[in-house]
Image 1 (cartoon, helix red, strand yellow):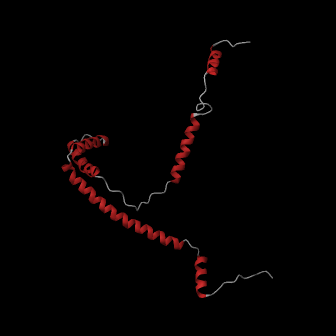
Image 2 (spheres, rainbow, N blue to C red):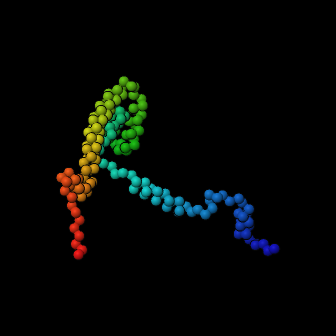
Image 3 (tube, rainbow, N blue to C red):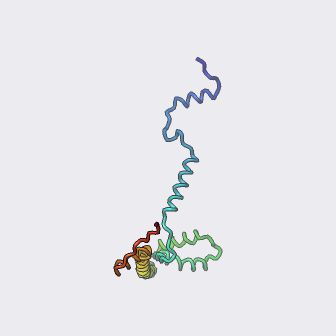
Length: 163
């Protein structure tokens, strides 16, 4: 038997003796990346378009607090322009506050939540009314004319032009 000499032959024989992992054999990294991008495109296509007329969700008590905190923080620290720094300082302040200090912000948040509920009820009523109106307009004119003819007793007979 002939054996190959050199480093390459030794590597090949060692690799031949190793057990192969089925997950690694025959796969390429580029192929998996392509699969992910195609899945992302499919997800975007399936997602429904957002309605611009739909009311925005109300802010939580923390975000109501953060609106006021940003103003005071900017006055005290005019040289800090990082959004992350403002958010971090606001979060630390919120954690250190007592429930009595948080109460006015929670009250404002609940008031905004109630307003949002009213707006959503009105929005949902408009949507359901629009859906009912679209159902009638989806019917073709011939269906509407057929119903009118049935009510009056008139029947349109097809005219034969072949003689």
